[in-house]
Image (cartoon, rainbow, N blue to C red; front, side):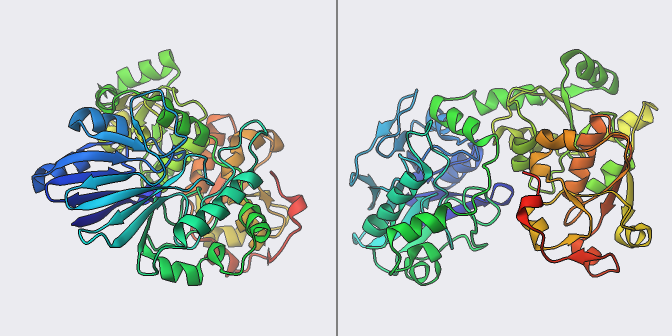
Length: 470
């Protein structure tokens, strides 16, 4: 038996490859199918099953394309109604895979259809559980993503989750391995560990949600308290996973169109395509195509695209570093942005070589900011509200990047703003969006927030949350 976790850092997502005696199963695959098919081919095995733990909201799963290419059967747990063919498993149903077996444990709570898969080895001993978003390392799945017009509340879902954990998961042996769908950085939970697997026994000792003496009322309160609004693309990705989507091969082919600078400009003007610049923040601020939006591949690329670009069908043209065009299209498709229509051939250097118009963003380092700072300076802190509450520059306005599209009316194009975050990545994203919307008086502060707080710039440890924006 072979079990392999295939972890994708930018999405904080874990897919799984299980193999036994010439047969393989994939759990929660990403959109691209090549890694799974290549792995099975290299090992001389056939992919027999594709198990989905639930309708994922933070990425588009690769189950449909993988099933078409391999003949594998798509398996969902109870209550998972789809618009395509799949096997709807019953609670307790067993699937044979070579010399091992996988048992369906219906564990509703994160969503009604959420299911955990229990892997038993050749000796029929419980070996591992693949928990999806039901149980994370150090946390559990948020219960507010599947609320339906008030008919199903987050409190009800949390109550289901409490029962699922205690009746289906915590009854298993302490030596059972826990393999979740996500780790730290995912918005599917509140406080996940950076570890990507653990033993169930250790989770019983360390995970707040698995406390032995915890009542259902306490659990519901703790799990629902302090939930930030889910990213806007979550509901759209869940709908794609439930209803179906375009083949990844078609998406990749469409996005692979090479555009000369002249063609790039024509496409931008005629289709109102979003110009997405995915280079490093250092390269971007020195020069970019006017009206470009920066979301660098070296950050949490896909989640930020999902949070900041409202329309999944928005035409997108790409400015990428050399050799990164295909990767960009693939990473957009992972979160349902399937309408990339081409990339700038030769990258930004080709644009400059033709002496076409470029724009820049004034950028300073922390030391320069320290020298310039006064309480009269308009400072925009684009970190999350929770980060801002912990410590902030005196008189800084919280202008969270997560909600920039909703809160733009709160600032003035007539004022000059200095913008910062924790590292300079989010402030560069925010500055690019504001610049494209006609805000020209911007100064981007690049560098670590820790360096700002350690400098002579005055900071405060706490502000009343009621003063925060959204």
